[in-house]
Image (cartoon, rainbow, N blue to C red; front, side, top):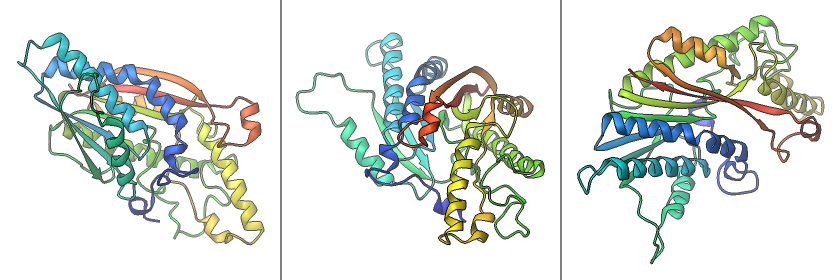
Length: 325
């Protein structure tokens, strides 16, 4: 499995496309909008950049990136109206939309054009001058020149890993996580530790890369799909993918999927805790933590088993703002 090549959200605008099934992510974007707006205003006030470079990491192809862009432009316009006199300091905003190469960038840019096209006679004031480009690459690689970015944003992306956990690759025999595709109740502690270590390795690398790319005083707003406590067996993702694994086991029993393929497959994912992220940020010494917010959201009943909705099972989410000193 080549994650960089093969992983992406469902394309297009059909019933099962990502753009039609990203309500939970949209709620998260709206919930964290005040944090994004505060970060934009802090960067603007402290640095007064002529060109503000803003990056959305893991943008996918749905409407949520448009919500993020709108909030940034609105915040820049507000700060300009308060701090600038006449035409003394007009800021241009360069947006960079980053996702893996398999992402449906065509759909993303078509929807962007439709959203921001100004009809004739529109009385709405124009936004600040802005430019948009796509960047197809993994954010576990270096993406930008040194000190060239003012704000990074990533929402509901950093639970994805750069690869399957080291030690659980499909070619290794025997398979250590049989019949499971993530951390389940039957997963051995040694296997759960491999998932945890892959997260630690990836997120530490992510922090080092972004530190190099951010200007001094720049910010990162990161939104995580997380778990409530430190028990690696108890997260929301554990429950969700246990049901997926059960469905796959059913396909194996019917001869529709090869048992060996299921036994050798492990999702490159990890449902982290607030404490794990805080510890890694603190240990790195690369950023200060400005703000942390945790909240819960209901499962989307269209996408999950009926009894999960009846039990009012929720997804745990937390957001944090990091500053490069």
